[in-house]
Length: 396
Image (cartoon, rainbow, N blue to C red):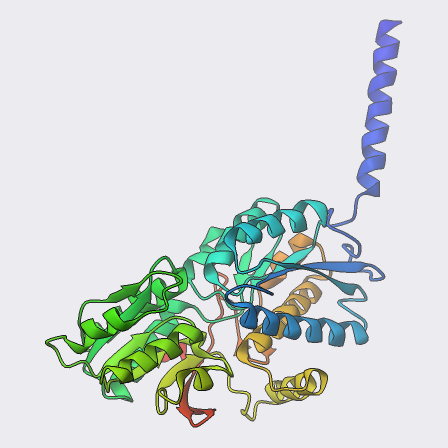
């Protein structure tokens, strides 16, 4: 009797397991549409800096994401599956980024995640997505270590080793610089990484760098740092400033106030419509590298700029363009693999080739980073004018 009862129990448990397996979403347990047949939802978890120190960047990125999702849904979604955006404000804080990632992974059970802007905040969230088997695409975190966290972590922006090297090439060959000082923000993965790569390439090309100058996060008074530069025995003809636009403007004003007439050069963190007004014109004729030029003749870029301007009433910056590209890259990846499960999106992104986006055409390499060009812009009045485009092959 005990044997019969045990056998019956085993059979019932087996049937139950088969039944439960059949009820699970095909492809993964992250939501509808996993079988690629359409009629379901693609849950896209968005975690961005919508408030706090880099809110301007986060809000622009979010607008690009919303525009892309709206366009894709209007044309039938991703293989017939509607994009559902689930968005969290991470308040420019690493703890908030980690919390948002856990909510998106365990409570919302998203198919894919998009975020953040700052590299340090993407690094805070990425381990959670990696451990839960969820692909994550960062639109604009350029520090190389972000995608090294795992094989589910991707990006659609160029990375700092290329950006730093390209800026150094431009400094030596176009700006004719010979002696530079690198000014860095302590504790910033973005600033430290970009500065390190610039310096290595600048010195390799024959330039000389005097000792770096560093300032702590939250610092508003740059007089001591600038004084150190002004008193340097070596005549500095270039100040490389790999940090964000508010501090760039403050640094520029202090440099000119203390009579330092060296040229200034920076990275994509400079891009902001408030950069010139904040600097009181002290950045006139200076340069920075960026992800795209909205005035280009590229058809995809032109259509994006037109749609964005019509919807939001102003021209998009590169953060908006990168957010837009992140969603379209997910679409191309999912459709290439025939479904919207976590695994299918991951596999599609890993094999992404010839993606034509608002920020250019690119492939993702074996480390899940795009090979794409950087645009060098000159500050002329209130405008940013393109002077050169540098390809990855130019610095390899």
